[in-house]
Image (cartoon, one colour):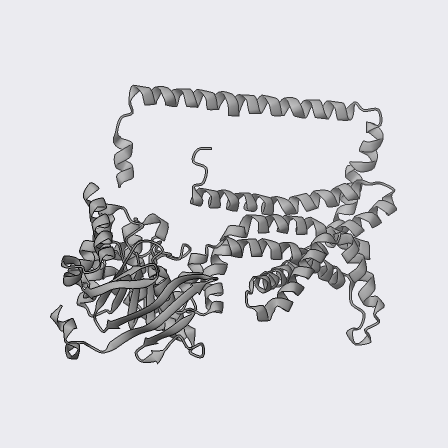
Length: 290
Length: 259
């Protein structure tokens, strides 16, 4: 109601002049300059690409439409495996990461060994290259010859390796979020008689989740493309399927196809992450107009 | 005032603080505090910052562990580590200087959270109880707003009601008006007056001398971790005995006069 009242006043000369100037500047800078520079850049990039001496060969072996169409079904089928691995490892990462973060925030001296263990885990898996973890888990665990487990499918081993690695990253994100919730919130909850675990569950974690949503989604985007690495274990995912097609056609186009599919997969998540980040920033009204 | 001079007129003893000491490392913050709160009373703690008021309140709510002495709530020694601390905190409400409303919950949910998860009410029961209380402080229309949309005074009144909703045996108020703009102090003090009228027992740290004089039953002046002087509110303010008390009151009054 106060808003509509505010809108009804007629702006002064000075304000009108300021608005006209801002509008002109905005038009000039965002619309015209952005448009021209984008087109110019695209044209230059395209021309220098197609005029390079080896372009016809590259075009033939990387961007061959026929091969792309032939390879698409197999690559798509492989992508379904990536999506399944993504789903299970994302769930696993959330559970394990959150558990690790909670263990690291325990204060009582009784929990010191657990806390240290959690810290050691995070240090180890944040440092280890994912591909090494994939090799160790993918070839090491079957090597143990645990007969009662039967033959473990490679995609399960891949999911396990991804979960192990990403849980360490996500644990750090969660821990930062938990610590970013002001201690006074905890105090208020405990003084109302809520227990430690109720305080965590009902007061601290909901606020922590909100704070870490953007970095969490960034990790999800990374995970989305890293699921392609399970191909090193021989799982027939999008990347491996592309590799098979590449060998069959003696043409690299299937790699490009699978790459594009991963990009298409990532775009909605990336946009969602951007959206969440801006919304949070707006809610906290941090920077004013800057 | 006279009722405090003849103990037989007093209600039952709610809080009995006996010789409480508190050290932080080698710094002694409370050096043997004796204090009593009877049912329906308001006891006001006054004293400059660092005198130990907050530490005393936090000790009573078991947020701080005392170094010596005893705290009895309804004759039960709550400073005994064998008592269930969550259980004790359920009986004692604490309201902070900075409100500490839960930022991710609406005003209504702030109040219903403990009603549901501590007292075990259903969502519907908790909601209707919370709405009655919000109605009482004139904030029923704001029930679905988030704390950051409310003024400081409204937030603090919500925080007080959040504690009162659990029907605490004792309510602790830690300088609840100190973070408020002067024009918002009145509405919070009004609510406290209202609570007293409905029989709530309150122990409050405050800088509002005139409020303490008008509403408190008993005033305790704390300085350097010891009680310098205490007495019925009217006596205390009209006829302070100790030089340090006189000096403190004078300092606060001259500052109030400047404004």
